[in-house]
Length: 200
Ligand code: VGL
Ligand code: ZN
Image (cartoon, rainbow, N blue to C red):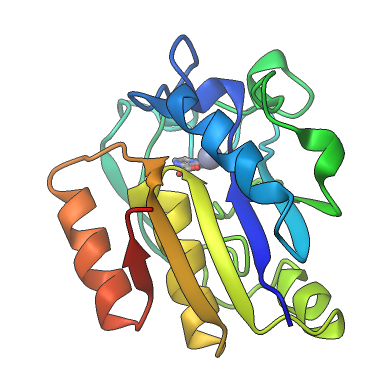
């Protein structure tokens, strides 16, 4: 069985000029498009927050972007407002071949819980449904690419590995936020979880 390509959050707000811009976020688009033809399925994820989402610093009196607060489900980094439902920043990068997607899955729509992972919200128990989609279509092997390496790609890859999928992350087709060593921590965590990291 061929592999499913999981494209994480290649959205305007994570690209240069966006609200939570990841350096070089737009550089990966052509390479991702080139992988779509060989994939058994193409899944795009879309960060999709309601205005006033609990992961936004603007929702927390006295806090700023990149501060960390304790949520009922654990520590949560606070972000600039980003990927607000139906806003231009939440749209996929213009160059991404979204018409090739078999499935588009949105996440982060629960006002009270962030969702870095494409499989579970940040409480690590509420499923998004992606596992069921991939399993019912018979996929056991996944290739992951997208934004950001150290947050949504990392959490998605580790969750997928924990669920028993064979996961390869193409680091050359990811870009990182890298907050206080988060990129190295993500690489260590993905490796420990049994994710294969590759550069081409
Ligand atoms: C992401 C921070 C907040 C990501 C999403 O896609 O990595 N990071 N929301
Ligand atoms: Zn987000």
